[in-house]
Amino acid sequence: MSVGLCLLKILTEGTRLQKQAGFVFRMVFLLVFASTVINIFRNTEFQEIQKIEVADYSYAKEIYRKELAEKAADNISNILYSQIEAECIDIEKVEADINISENGSIDINRIIISSADPESAADLIRKSLGQETEVINGIG
Image (tube, rainbow, N blue to C red; front, side, top):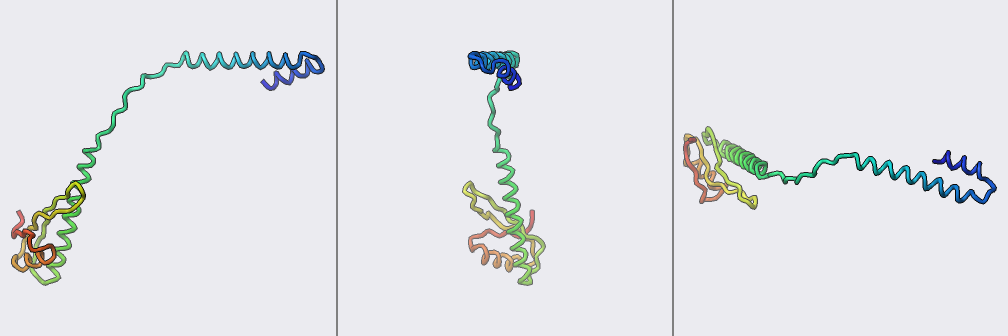
């Protein structure tokens, strides 16, 4: 377009037709450009836009909750095991049974232990977690 305008200026310099010729040249360019754009849109096939379905994240949320409960139970078990072992009580295994509620609070249902001295281990666990904590001897 700029080459065409330069040629037009050179050819019509000093005449009264310079502005009118420039206007006509711009209109012709605009029509050619517009027809090209219109043909592109006319010949382009657009795929039908399908309804976007919202992904169901409840499955991932459930996996997260389950994994969180397992990690929390493992951490509680390891801490209790360390406390019992520090008191020189013979302990084989400590297993925490917990639930994590919707608001994120951890509820300890029971603690299952395997110990040669279950009463001493249970007393220590109840001192740590509260007297209402259910302690069961025997992993099973």
